Image (tube, rainbow over all chains, first blue to last red; front, side, top):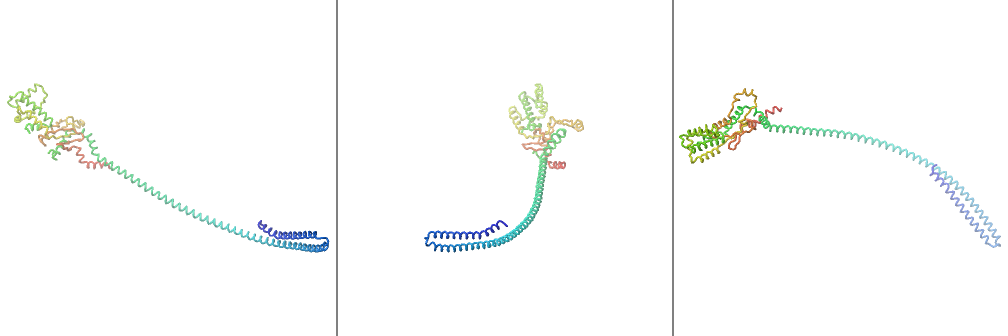
Length: 225
Length: 196
């Protein structure tokens, strides 16, 4: 039996007993007071009245005693009855308590099982959801990563191609500009080369021929007129 | 223009030469009019003059004598003792003001040297002949431009070969360099085949 049930039992057992004891004590105290009162009164009365009064007192006292004994018997009877009632009540209560406790315990166990089941279900569901979420996340991550890598690769390739193209253009432009410079200065180069080489290789006759060619050309162009 | 100026210009190639001959003429006229003035002919005066100057051992080269003898006697008629200086001054001015063509050559006609091997030179016709370049060019100018024209030869190695001309401040290049510049596109085109 649980502590709570025991406490309830004791309460239900002790209450009638206590009530009956209180009643008995009250009766006793009441009778005692009455008796004391009668003794006092008897002491105050004169002696000539004493015999009648003693007889009266004796009869009264006898009746009182009878009443007291009757009361005591009633009290005992009440006490016994109350004990019986309380005992039966205790038993009934105990029985009810045990029954209720058993039911509560049963209900409690059922509830615990239900909770356990619920918890397990919820845990399984959560695990399932979590797995699903994780797999979705991983899938998305994989897709995003592959997309990112492919776009990065594409951008890198584009940038590289652009760089290569601009480098090629630079090289071509440089080549063209250098050749242009060479073309512009080719005459100067040839002049320099020829001035170093031809002057010393031509005979005087050749030189004079060139001079007269120039003079004839100037005459044709009417340079002198 | 005085006749004698025309003669001087026709027989001289450069201004320097013309002025030098003018100087020779002045010296002869001084001799003729102020040394002795009773010559019967100009030739006689010239003979006397050459004799005297040879005796005095002055530095007058033989060319001047030869040139003096080319002067026509008629040309001396312009000269009188009282107007010699004036006429000579006028002649000088005419010479100074005469048109000059400047001819730029790539070589020094006085000191031309070729670096051809001797064997190459031996195989080239007329290579050993010495040529009087200034006179040849001067004669051509007299024959083709103007008999009175004077010339001046300058050296410009940059023209490579041929000549460049300048007259009255106008310069024109007829040299090998100019021909290269004129044919620049053709040269570049032919060189571009090497580039490829």
